[in-house]
Image (cartoon, rainbow over all chains, first blue to last red; front, top):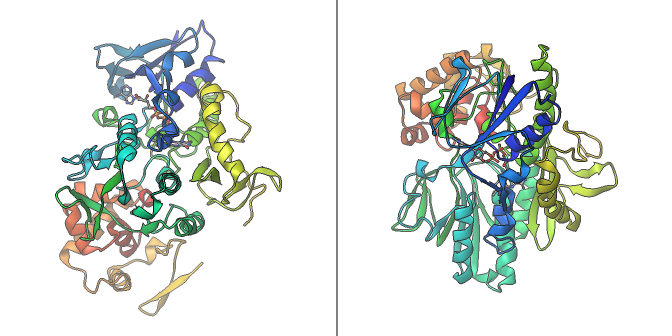
Length: 409
Length: 105
Ligand SMILES: Cc1cc2nc3c(=O)[nH]c(=O)nc-3n(C[C@H](O)[C@H](O)[C@H](O)COP(=O)(O)OP(=O)(O)OC[C@H]3O[C@@H](n4cnc5c(N)ncnc54)[C@H](O)[C@@H]3O)c2cc1C
C-alpha cells in the first residue's frame, strides 16, 4: 500500500482529500488526513457575524460530513514533520509514515506578536474578526455600542483574504447607518500598504469607495504597539491614532508545527514552487492554501484553483513524470460593499484586477471593480457553493487559470 | 521602461522604480539612491542593513522582509524605521539596488 498523508482538514486539505480519493485506487492507496479540530469553520462567514448577518450556527459543520468513506481520519495536533525520514509525529504520540505528503495547515492570527495588543483591552475594546471567538465578542460589543472612533488596523502583510478588512469597514458603514448612529461613528481604515489594497488599480478604485462612504484612510502605518491606557495605536515612526474600538487584523502566520519542522520562513510559511506547488527542496511534498509562501492572495478561491493544479501534478509525480500543470496565481474575490451590493475582482500573479464583466465577456452576470447587486448575490452564493461543492472537490464554473476575456485594459 | 539619472549615467528601473539591472549598482550609486529617498548620509548602521540585504538576495534570490531583517541583521525594528523611515524593507532594497521584497505585495 502506498501512503498519502494530508495535514490539515480545512478548506484546502478537505478539497484535496475529496479530489484524490475519487481517483486513487482503494486497494493501492491508504489516505490519511489529520486535523486538531472536529469542526469545520466557514471562515469567510466570520466577517458577517459582528453585524448580526450570520451567527455561529451559519459558519460551522462537522468536518466528518466532508470526509469520503475509506479515509483514515486522525484528530490530533501535529507535532512536527520529519521530511528527511518521510514521517509525521503527532501530539497523541502516533507516528505516521508517508510516501507523499500534502501540507494544508493554513495560517492563523497571532495578536501576541504586537506589543500591547493582547493587553487589558483585548476583547473589551480590541477585537479581531479572523477567529470565531473574536467575531462573536465583537458582535456582543456592537449590540450596546453608541458610537465613537472605530479604527480598523492591518498589522502587517501578508494576511489571508486581503479584501476582508475593506469589506469590514464597508459593512460597518452600512450597519451603523441602519442603526441610525452613523453620524456618531468615525470609521478609520489604517493600513501598512501605500493604498487601500495591494494592487495599484484596484487600490485607487477601492480608495474612491472609502471616500464615497466617508471612511478615513491612513496608509503606510506600521503598528509598533497598542497603548491600552490611552487607547491609541502607535506606529514605528511614532504616529498615533486614537480609538474607542480597535478592530485589528493581527499578524498572520503559519502554524507552529511548521516552525518545529524547520520547514518555514520567518512567518512559518513554507517555501513553495509558485507554479508546481511542490515544497522547495522535496520531491514528495506538496503545499496548498494559506500555508504556502506564494506571492498570491491567501483565499479559499485561490486554494480552489490551486487544487486543480495540485491534482494534476500529483498524478504526474506518482507516475514518475515531471509535474506539468502551472499555477498562475489566480484569485477571484467578491468584496461585500454594504447596502446589498458587492464588488468583484479577478487577478493573478501577472495581471492586476481590471474592470470588465465576469465570467462571460460583455455579459457577466458579474461586474469587475464595480459595485452591483449581482456581485452581492455572488458573495451570498459563495457560502452555498463552499459547503455544497467547493470543499467536496467538485468543479466550479470558473477556470483555474485566469482568463483575460471580458477584462478592459 | 523608465530610467533614472545617477552620477551622469542613465540607469534602467523596474515597474516598482528599483534598479532593473543589479550589476548597475555600486556604493556611490547607493548614496545617490539614498538621497532620492530623503536619506542624506548613509551611516555604518545603514550599510549593515544594505549589506545584509545584498547577501540575503545573493543567497536566496529574494530581498528579505522587515521581520527577517530584525531577526537576523542585528538592527531592531525601531532603529530600522529610524534609518529608513516609513518602509524600511522597501527603501533599503531600493538603495541596495535590489527588487522590491516579495513580502511587500
Ligand atoms: C474573516 C475571513 C474572511 C474570509 N473571506 C474569504 C472570502 O470571501 N473568499 C475566499 O475565497 N476566502 C476567504 N477567506 C480565506 C479562506 O477562509 C482561507 O484562505 C482558506 O480557509 C484557506 O484554506 P486552508 O485549507 O489553507 O486553511 P484552513 O481552512 O485555515 O485550514 C487549516 C487547517 O489545518 C489545521 N491545522 C493547522 N495546524 C495544525 C496542527 N498543528 N495540528 C493539527 N491541525 C492543524 C487547522 O485546524 C485547520 O483546520 C476568509 C478568511 C477570513 C479569516
